[in-house]
Image 1 (cartoon, rainbow, N blue to C red):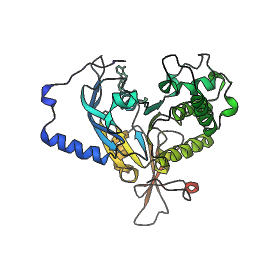
Image 2 (cartoon, helix red, strand yellow):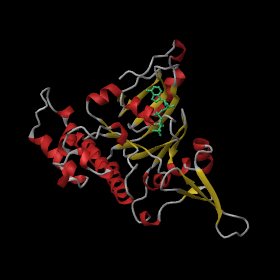
Image 3 (cartoon, rainbow, N blue to C red):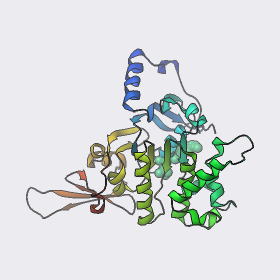
Image 4 (cartoon, protein in one colour):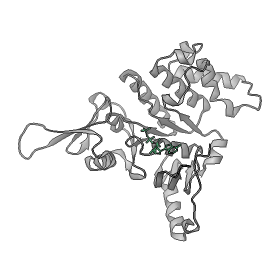
Length: 314
Ligand SMILES: Nc1ncnc2c1ncn2[C@@H]1O[C@H](COP(=O)(O)OP(=O)(O)OP(=O)(O)O)[C@@H](O)[C@H]1O
């Protein structure tokens, strides 16, 4: 897909100073994802992403948070090489996007709306698609491919559904199948577009547990989500986006009331409550963009109690 027109100009050529700072960012990215000055302009002239920059290391889960239309999917498309950058650069695992894609290192778990659920295909066939890049031209699966599919289905607890048509599954089951496809691909970088939309809390917890395991295996995950309440629980880092990157870094530093207000403006429902009415007041703030609200106490994101015993995000 080439949804963009190229607007690169000679004045954007990197100077020695910018090259040095980019090298520093690449080191800081720890070989994960580096987005440097990335700008995407669609064919109709709309610039959906302007001079976006952040770096995330491997072995981490990063939330991509912003209002509808802030450029989250556009950023995913740019990392997947579906849209061209007008200027700037994206590097994945210290290589250009093209090379990373060629080596099957990047997997994408799409939003539900992007999938044709009426298309007659079995669950196991969807997961096998993750193996295509490992097969020859004729796409004849070998034992290693079948083993990878079996393992991936087992890991998301969907083995018993393997002969079902994909359209016959619930929303949460469909998400798990697409996660299994990413697992079968054995990619090091996994991009998840709204993995929690339309799934119940139990499935959401299952997905979060799996993402933590993948993080501990040294993979890098970028997760777009409107479930603000879940972000401090499982995302080590956060990228706040609104046409550009407003802020990025460790979630506890980025998920502040001030930053969230910048990212969401008046879009979020935001309540301020006093805890006991005593002076000086210690306000609770509740931000809600979806079914799971984010609770801030003294401007700091609170976590759900039941996750406190688990390994804290790094
Ligand atoms: N193919 C396209 N051509 C022109 N403009 C587009 C195209 N795709 C997206 N846009 C515009 O680019 C902006 C960013 O869209 P994008 O889909 O990246 O947002 P998003 O943050 O993923 O939104 P959501 O949370 O609703 O999924 C929006 O203003 C959108 O209308």
